[in-house]
Image (cartoon, rainbow, N blue to C red; front, side, top):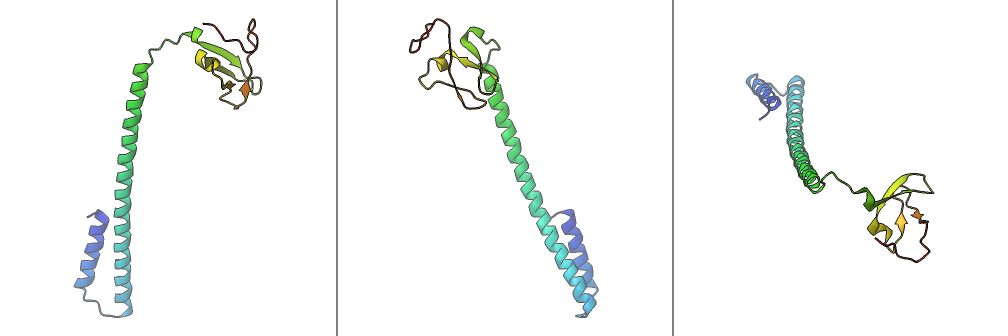
Length: 133
């Protein structure tokens, strides 16, 4: 029982001790105490919901930390710059990087910023030729 619920129960006990008659004042006082009781119950339910959400968010943070540590373990900090080709998108002007597997793909290169297909003009390679490693 929360502090507010205890206070409402105390007021309810005081009202019972006054032996209020069914006059207008007694009815109003009883209505106010009943309303306060309903508000106290709603607040307790909200507190429980907030606690549940807080537990869920904590769980999500823990899972994200686990994922981040797995990614950090897989990443050794050394990217071989020879494995990537820097391309300036002719449509949006952003510099993007593609690895060799993406360049050899039949799907073509698609700019991740504007989703436009990028045509590569690599000197010394004619249309349809494979890129040699």
